Length: 587
Image (cartoon, one colour):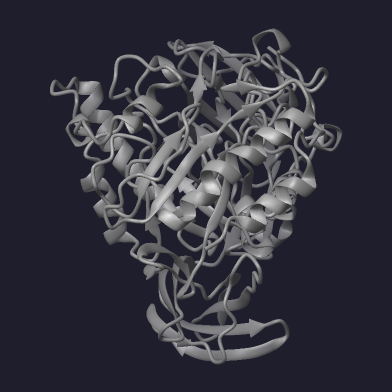
């Protein structure tokens, strides 16, 4: 396996990696971070319980990553085990203890003191269990069992592969986001759903409470209280003198939500933003709007892979670096591609001002039995003369695994939406990308839009368009981009570019590095980027183009088409040119 570290690797290789509070949208003071060194073992599939462990692993980095300290692949016949001892702090005494996992890929079972306390399927969403009744005085034992067949089965896995090749990347197995505990009372706030409405000037809040009690909310603008009232479990809170969120002014309101039952039994801190994503007519075309004004979204494909941590950012500062750098260069949107990030990444997008298009993690099969790099261009180029809508349900025979995967896909899709719903930065849901496991795309796109009408939906990003909501979404590499025939939907180019350069000492594997179009120098790469935008992209804005997603933020493994190198050390293009081009990407 290849090793290429980032500047944050040294800080990550410690006994308490990623120590920050992992859920900024719902903060309690009484919590414990369980990241750090665990025992681990890889056994065969017949092992019912692991007694002998192979060594130590650094959580929350996946076993395949170098930051885990193991750097080892596992197969579909393997089972991965973790073990850690812990004791409760005094502040947990007399409380309920909730054990949280940010994400574990793919199927897992959680044991406390050899008692099964719960299980979870799906590698990208957070989950938790009340472990109180399985705890003992003094030292306790946490054991996690994991099964992850990656691409040797049907599950949702994104761009993970058992063996990386092309634009398929090293697998991520086991725990890869923060493990933590918090203490709560018998009656407590389990979750809430926040929906801003700038037209009515209200924040809608729906609260799920364990047990009984009355709710109160206090909304703050800095130190100033702007609203304070008792609320029902479903309520609307008026927000006077609205301050709207945008990438240019990412204003966030803080709030405190309390549950009282004679006294305060639970209190959580959170934040929200008042903003609105919508579609409206401007200069003869339906366009993307933000806060009831036309707003061009200029973005980048963001795979969220790291050369040392893989799916797991090495530190909080590393996450911030990517977002701040792209913001400085003039981008206002990131398309989070086939991955769900740790919660803190979305928090940083919220506070720094970066719109996010969130992909669902793909799985299953392609609509075609083959894939080549130029295929999306061919289908898009021929779209005026062939009916791509017929491709959506290409497979008419269904195995048991396919039926099971489709059910699991829809369950995980809405689990992801629920987990991320409260983050103001998210402006678009992307259920399918380029036919990767695509099925019933229009039905699913419509279902997502009905579930969350406050955001855009790109029902079939790139190709196999089913005429669904909300965009005409095009991917275009190599071939020239010309705005397609307008059909009433905003036109977005949701992937394009991919211009590439190999830089010695900053690539994962020089011999196998590839890109759609390769350039030998910073000057030639910069000039190609400039010409692409001035000759093809910017002129298309007058013909209905409403958003762009250039490929991509950074190199990833064999791909060398990033604006940044994989180790985030070098900006490959001229910074002033990027700022100048982005200043021209507007209505």
